[in-house]
Length: 300
Length: 321
Image (tube, rainbow over all chains, first blue to last red; front, side):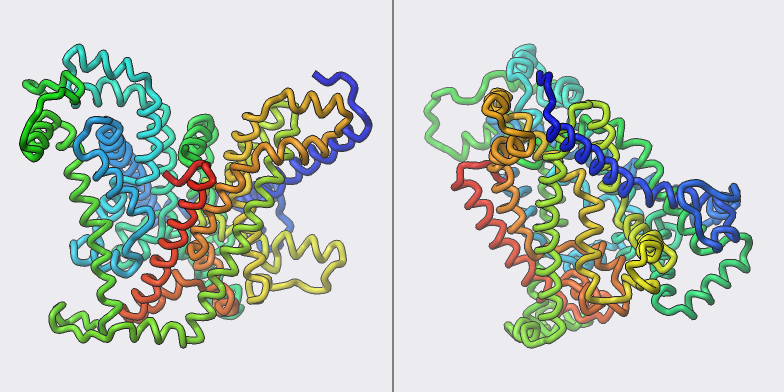
């Protein structure tokens, strides 16, 4: 449109691009720095001065981390809870969302209100803990899946999506004699793929990133630990060591005796292992979650 | 699936004397929908409503070994204790301070970034900035806390830069100084979510009529003036709604960053209600006091959220659901 830029407009542009570039640097630098440290020789890293590129390339950190039995096991659990948790919540949320999107459903109001009320009110940490204990779910894998079968936010965005589908499609399915199961499985589900992708992304990220439920419910069962919780334990150690120098040195010494690694190197490597799956996936689902945010964030 | 007919939409004007019978009839017709929802209603009841029963513990001197009937009831004693407890009042202060900082910083930075992004005309550049700025939102707080720790550590980049530019003489142990915690917390939140928070504003900006910009340009308005007089007013209603909604979450200052970045040296500033609940409840086993604190938070949040939602509704804007 505009053909003649004034000088002040040009200056504005330069400043703007500079600021946004700075933002990108601030956002990316910690990741690139961590990546560089994870690929650098652990002993060499102690000298400091590693920024964006490894000084002495080495895969030892990854060899060490991936050969740890506990970390291998935690990776498997992380993957399992992400896959199972996501599939279950996407499917179940879609089912309930379909039911409450049907204007004539007898329990429509009741179900909607019952779910939405839980956004405002919840028992809180301790009552939930007692519930899980009383249900005998402590130290079990299912504590990762069962409490999150349906997310209210998921329910809302799927329902809004179904509401936005052309009524004529559902109408004609009904006229053709399709029952509710049929309509749901062969018409609504396929049409909802975009919104289901959004929900799957949110729930997958949530499951993959969770560590608190592991800490709270399963911390005594090492076989059920997840990557994030293992990383959290490492961080907690180094946080403690930062404030108490001597203890930290002891910890560092203990780790060094095990081989060629240091706490800093292990932490960096674990950070990369724990975040790479997400970094690989989210850019490709960008258009979906941006839409999902818009529906869920401000809904008329 | 076989024999069901769900053909007509339901409003046929048959006069049925018995409403209940009609209801049952409809249920029979919609049995597929019932099968699809009732198991989840049961799930909802068990996992979301049943725990609320646990609030009764806040009114007892709870002993895990005793049955419900045998518990000693003490009324509001635990609540009274909370509000005389110096530690709880400090925790409350920290909660309000951190969510307040979060609210203000979060809004200002997200709106500013959205305004800047909106002025970018090179589509590819805009796309790249956006994609990168969403990244920290998706990583876990565990990873983010690790990054914050690393960045602020004595051999981290911040200390190094400050030293190099001569702003400090020796390394600062940022996370070891309580007074810095709120600032670190706010900055960490901005780093993690500023890009993500622009999504809603950028969406709102696309709804602004381009003719307004053209008219302003003809009138000689510069870029900054257009931003200030057109773009910002254009997203005003979204800002107002989000602001009101966020006030509803004033007691929800989060849990993970405080827990992960907190340590013995900054505990006076990092401990919030959620951590208080966790420490008293799980670590010390004082369920009654811990639940009282949690219940206080939930009830106040409930009131705030309802008020916020109603105000937003009255303003004729979008609302939470």
